[in-house]
Length: 364
Image 1: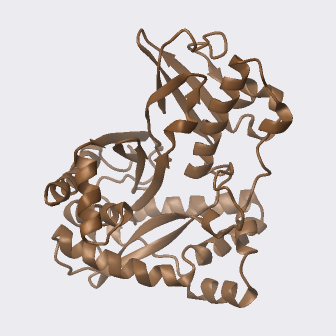
Image 2: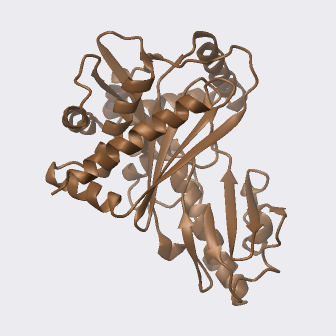
């Protein structure tokens, strides 16, 4: 989502208000047709600014892919505005897939990663789930601005912890506070991981879904203090990062889709049905990283605000997403309103936000 200040350079004839556009219609000169019907661009106008809403099918692109699409749209808009379109120079690179990632590893590495990977069964009960209810997507969005974000960075540096470590710790505190753990010994949360890190020579902006996941297990009886959970999180992540994180799950997904999309979708829908019936799932945290404001220039019009939201889950769980833009951090949750109450989600997000703010205030 981007808010752009209205100006004479912001060409209304290129992006009509109140109309849904396929990105292919905007970048038709690029002759890149594989996005048609899989992505949508909406333009919402008011007196002082315009809001762009860009959505794409998650099977086609992950967060990094969506950012790449937004950068491409901004670049193409600028070229159209300047009447300087160069289709050959602007065409995106070939789409990448998880098989391109797994091909970077030797067969023993792949066998070892796949054999050591185990999908974590749902270990948290989410109140309010209704078996058989239709999915009603909903979102909760909260912002963390300066000076809180600056304080949070200082807090992390003082403890040799990244922003991602701090997000995981706050997420775990919120889960322990508002969800009902079922496992008495240890509890997992699922963390998404961008597999572009393994592609040699990749520019990291391919419009594709190259996401995988890892599970972070913490003791069920751990002290609920943020600092204690942060220390344990950092320790566990160091262990996980030694083992090609995300590779085992990526291989499993690749194998699943060999049978074709219909069978893969049927497998996922059985998982959804089971989650709705048992009211159990594992909360998911996805750090989308920073959105590059220098690549969101629409001619000479800059984006004033930008953030990403993830897919709303159809199971009775939640997916917490974090994205940064300039000096702000946005937390967004997609969830199924028929399966989990909005009040619970609001309390969950507020707890996580308050933990991060409290940590930022403790920074020297």
